[in-house]
Structures are given as C-alpha cells and as structure tokens.
Image (cartoon, rainbow, N blue to C red; front, side, top):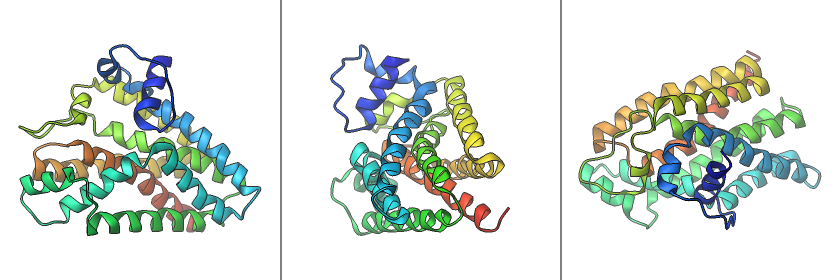
Length: 253
C-alpha cells in the first residue's frame, strides 16, 4: 500500500518524492483501491493549510487560498485537462478535430472561460456555505473536496474504453478490476457520511449519476474516454458535490 501512495504522490502532485517504485505502470493498475485514500491524505494536508490560513485571514479569503494551494500542490493537473476538454468539445468540430484540439498545448477561449467559471463557482459556493458551516466543517469540506477529485476519476475507470487508433497516457487505466473501483468508492462514501451525514451522501450520489451521462456523451463523440476527459471529470466531481451540498444546506434540507 505504501508503494501505491508514493506512486500516486509522484504522479498526481508536484511534491518531490525521490523514492523509486518498481513496475510503476502495473502498480498503478493494481492500486486503484487506494486512490481515494491517497487523495484523502492529500486533502488532510490541504485542510491543515486551510486551517492555518483562517488564523491569518477571514474565512472567505482562506477559502480562496485553499484553492490556490491545491493548484500549486497538484500543478493544476486536472484543471489543465478541464480546459483542454472545454476547448475541444465546445469547438463544434468533428471527433478527430476535437481530439487534436484537446492535444494542443495552447489554451483557447473556451478553456479559459471554463477555468474562469470553475473557480467562480467553487469560490462562490464555498463562501455561501461558509455562512452555514462552522470552522471545523469547513476544514472537513476542504478534505472531502480534495478527496473527491479521485473519487470521480476512479468511477470512469469502470470498463473504460480508449478511442481507437489513439495513443495517450490514460491507456494505463485500461483493464482495472471492478472490485478495486468499488473499494475506492466505499472509502469515499464512509468519509463523506461521517463528515456530512445524509446531506453529504446525497451530494456524493450526484457524482456517479452525472458520470454516467458524461461518459456516454464523451464516448459517443470520441469513441472512448481519453485522458483529458478523465481529468476534466476529476475536476468537476468536487464542484458537483459542493453545488448539491450548498443547495441542501442553504434550504435546510
């Protein structure tokens, strides 16, 4: 398990972890059951940082700094995928053109807008919900949101298909055993249930529901789920959760 956590740290963050892991590609496939544990531990780090910020700044500004910290720790790994996916899918082109646009390293108009809207929503929703949550639950929220990036990501590994005649890094996610994905989801469900009770569980359920439609759309257009579309949904998952949780909290449900 320790090797798996080290490998995920090397792959998903900018942390310098100079520990070699043998047979890394195969290890990734056989370690998905630990991916939400990894993101939970990363969330704990970010939660402590957020807590520290609250001693220096108002909670709304600490919330903004939390998102900046997350971007610095992860190198915007999934956000880059979100921007690329937005550029491709909102280009109104053929599937080959969409794929080519997504692989282009340049940031387009729709990608820029996607990042702007994304940060506007997560920051705005966080500020709204902070008027209903105490500090402890805001810290728990930062932990869970960081964890949920990999919760949503691992859902798309289920019977994943990669576009024909295409090559990319996300090929490493093909053929992952279903039980590993289920274990990853169960871990997230337990954490979310402990932190936010039934409101959190309902908010979590929105993620797999939307994942079904999301993958159906992506597969219809591209013939599979390339890496950028995986990363995009990893970014969208905490936003989905936060959106539903804010509604439930706001209306006292």
